[in-house]
Length: 164
Image 1 (tube, rainbow, N blue to C red):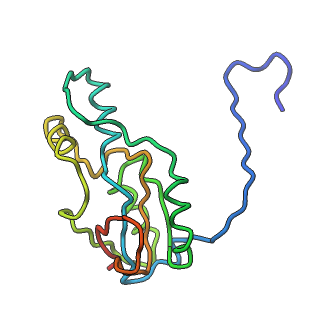
Image 2 (cartoon, rainbow, N blue to C red):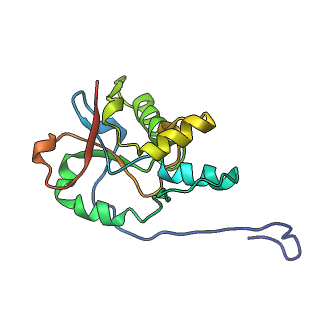
Image 3 (cartoon, rainbow, N blue to C red):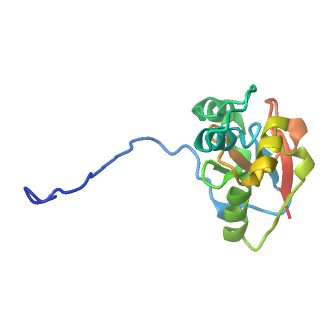
């Protein structure tokens, strides 16, 4: 409640209604869990940087901004094996994995950088701007830790590491 006449700024209020189908928690992470990313990383952050710095670079690069519900719906049969799913929008994949690792049971995360899917355009532009694609925003991607091996997955995901 705000007194009449005292609103001198914007107030935003939101509510969500839904069902939590599974309880994901960093507490569930164990040694040997696999680290998965649902697609190329850094596309969104790179397109934002190109726009922000008014760089007139032509190419096929566009933001990966898209709803993630399509991929989460495809993952439903794997829900019992998923430990945590996290959106790497703020701070990219590296920050997301650092947050997960720092909050887990004193476990580290081993990532194979050569397995992380980064487009050549993203690598080149990032290098030119002095940015690291691992820390660039990813809209429409999910980082997942799960217990399955890649051979057991029937959908196209990319294994980039494991819990150490």
